[in-house]
Image (cartoon, rainbow, N blue to C red; front, side, top):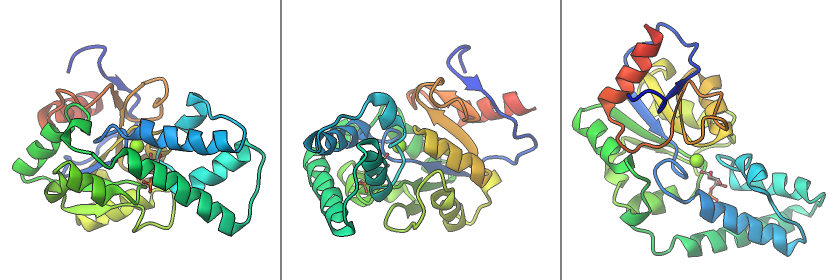
Length: 236
Ligand code: BG6
Ligand code: MG
């Protein structure tokens, strides 16, 4: 691992070899985070206010319903449950329109290579995403068959930073949290991984993802060996 590329804030010692890899979807595997942001902004704009990029960091990783609640709090607005369902549906219609032609070109650099390598090495792989559109996206990008388990917003009742999505992922892989690493681009996702007892790899800006055990700028050039070197060099 090149100096300066990776930042470690790890405090988790004596953890076992990595057997399972749990990937967030939006912003880690696929470049969809901006489509979510655009659709939420469009909704907020229709209500007379805007969402900053900083505020959007708090929306990443959060379920559709919780995201809407956060946005309405920003606008100091409240609506009936029926109206809120209508708004969430509208946002999803806009979002789905923006991913309707999705293909491999939307994959973020390095994600497909790493996923393929994990499978080739016989290691375990799960999705851990809040999205209810995950199966659609994994099919459109040709990655769905690589996953041993897909835990997403259709299977969870709690939103990140609650660790439920990752705990269900580890359980589906028949592994303990300490056997797994979680890749996350969101503050809430990193918190969820840490709370659940997973090793957290922040993928993105080290200033934003400072709570992660390790931060890498992207998955580009990341291999199983590089990850092991990163984790064990820092912990041993
Ligand atoms: C997360 C995204 O992966 O999924 C959030 O980071 C999004 O921005 C959430 O709101 C829910 O996604 P969806 O596709 O079910 O609306
Ligand atoms: Mg994400």
